[in-house]
Image (cartoon, rainbow, N blue to C red):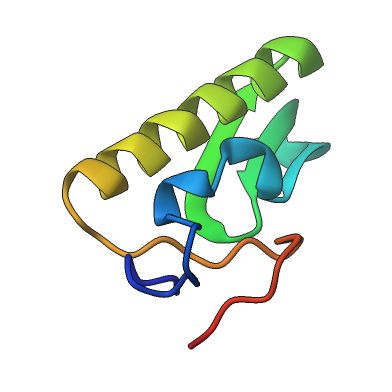
Length: 90
């Protein structure tokens, strides 16, 4: 998890953006139906379902953006993006 004070000088937690997270959309069988399922690896609680791939991707990204905004507004930790471009101090 990334704490609000986990960044070096000149870098704030707000520098984390949705596109740093690992979003996938895959077709899966759900309750006997073939649906696209959007997931975010760093947020295992996120699962978005739709029968259209593009809609599923857009809704997954929207959910991720809303979740990040909510956690920042509440002062909660964010999971460390797996592909963060700069090292973080723990």
